[in-house]
Every structure is written in structure tokens, then in C-alpha cells.
Amino acid sequence: MPSTGEPPTPEPVMSRYVAPLGFTLAAVWVAVLFVLASGTH
Image 1: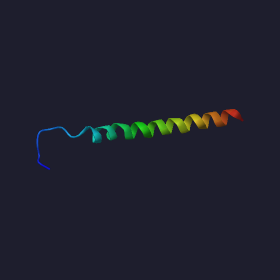
Image 2: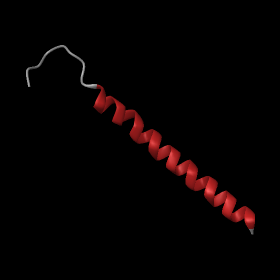
Image 3: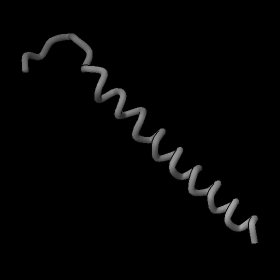
Image 4: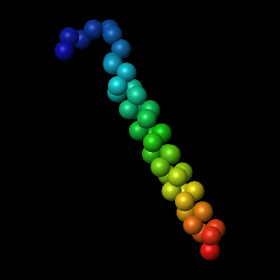
């Protein structure tokens, strides 16, 4: 690949932001399910 001054494609940037976001959403979802499950008892 020729090294030009162009910014990288949006794909790596998207994954860079979506990966932590998806992980945080998953952690929050698990926490909510845990609270709901413990609240039903």
C-alpha cells in the first residue's frame, strides 16, 4: 500500500468505537438482567 496522507478507512475507526461500546452495552445488559433476576425473588 502506498503511504499517502489520507486518513484510514472508516471501518477500523468504527470497530474501534463499536467494540468498547458493544462490550459496555453487554456488561450493562448482564447487570440489568442480574438485578431483575435477583429482584424477582
